[in-house]
Each structure stands twice: as structure tokens, then as C-alpha cells.
Amino acid sequence: MRAMHTPAAPIVCVGGLNIDRKLRLFAQALPGSSNPCEAHETPGGVVRNVAENLARLGLPVALVGAVGDDAGGRLLLEQAAQLGIDTDAVIRRRRQSSDSYTAVLDPDGGLALGLAAMPLVESLNRWALEASAALRARAALVVADGNLPPDAWPTLLAEASSGGVPLVGVAVSEAKMARLPDRLDGLHLLILNAGELATVAADPAEAFARLQGRGVARVLVSDGARGLRLSEPGGVLRHWPAPAVPVVDVTGAGDALAAGLCAGLLRHAGDLDAAARLGLDLAALTLQTVDSVHPELTRDFLCNR
Image (cartoon, rainbow, N blue to C red; front, side, top):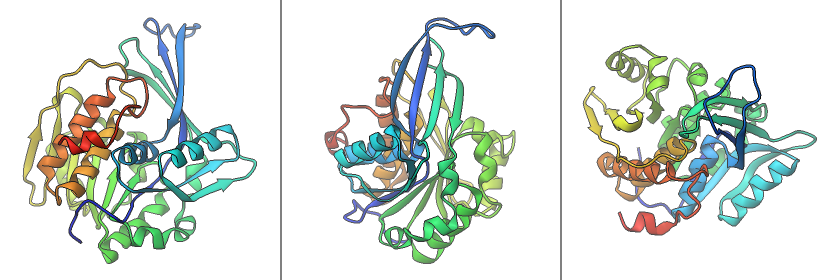
């Protein structure tokens, strides 16, 4: 694996690009009835959120994904351009709607129900990824999210194993954990939450061991207010507590964590302790806004740490 440092080469983010629609209930949901709520719509998608966080921190970023030729697709591309994100490798699908994710939130901001309508990300198979292979080969880091179809992963893992560009995987849901292949050799770091870890094995220690037995070098689990747990090569376990902050909306906090970790790994030459603390701080900031990415995030956040 090549040395990590603040890159001139881009961080290449591969995966879901979609519109996030958030419906926050005024009271606890009443099944089978109309429930009053407030609505909020923003650009979203796990890897797109990661990319926006990184771009706002002043790092060079490129996206690999797919959008439709609708208003949502235009919004995603226009906002990325405003942030300086390279979208040359984003596929434009004619006569198709862009992917969307609808989050129904409890009054306290917790996720009550998530609905993902994401057919376009399914098109990012190994043939579609060939067009952006040269971009990934010159990357400082490749970040891939769990929305990718199963046949995309062998391509990305093989590139990481042979080319030396570190590959970071970001899980997106318990349901999509099954998309990961049996062998994960070449995956430098897998980031997931406690629920996603439990799909591997009920006992966390057993789940860590199974994932590393499948070839993952490092497994990092976010457990909400309990903080982060990391299993390193050899089964060494580490823990970082989470900062206590008022929660406005949980959507995007995990993506901010992943972005902070990636930025920290590059900024601090692979120092996972510094990267974990940066990720936790960025997630805490994101918990305090209704947006999937904090709109006031700038490179000063990184410079001050």
C-alpha cells in the first residue's frame, strides 16, 4: 500500500448519487393513518455525501456514479460543480429518473423508516466501471459504498490489490451487506454501523473475526453515542468515545464519519487514532443540522485539527 498523505491526486468516490427527501414527523407515527410532517430535500447518496464533505474540507474529489436526465440529476451535477467535484466519470442516463432516498424521521430526528429507490446505481457493473479505471489508478484513495451491485466489487478489489491505491468500503444498510463478496482481499478499511455488523454475526467479536477472515484489513464500527470500535490486523481492538451533542437529524452523520476518517488517513499519514477523532468530530457537527452535509463546513474545520 502506498503511503498516505494530503493528496494532489483525487479521492475517487464510487457509488450512489441520489436526492434525499426527509420527512420529519411532528408526533409519533400512527400506522395506517395520515401523519403530519415537515419535508426537506437535498442532494444525497452515501458516497456523494462523503464526496461533498471531502470537497468542503478542501480536498480534491472525483465522483463515479450515475444520474438521470431529470431535475434531480441536474441538481446533483450542478451542486457538485459548484463544490469543485470532478463529475466527468458520472454516467448520464437518458429518459430515466435519478435515484432517490426518502427518510421518515421521528420527532427527535431518529430514523423511523428509510425508502431507497435506486435503480441507476445498479448500472455501475464491472463494464461500466472500466471507463473510469484510469481515474482510480491515479487516485490518492478510492471510497466505495455498499449500494454498488455485487459484480462491481471484484473489479475494485482487484484494482486495490494490484495497484496499491487504498480502498475504503462504506456500508449503507443491513439489507445491502449481502452485496459484499465472500472474499474482500484488498479492502484497506470497512466502515459500518452496529446493525450492519450484526448481519455478519450476532457477537461483535465473531463478526470482526469473520470479516477479517474474508480479507478485510481493518473493520471500523460506529455504534452511535457509544462511539467507534476498530479491529486491526491481528485482532487488536481499539475504542473511541463519541462527543455528546444535541441531535437534530441523524441522516448523513455516518457519511460524515466516513469522510472524516478518509480525510484523516490522508492528512495524518495513515494514523487511525487521528483519523477516528476527526471522523467523530465531523459526524457530531453533522448531527446538528437538517442537511445531509453541514452547509457551513469549510477547510477551516480540517486546518484546526
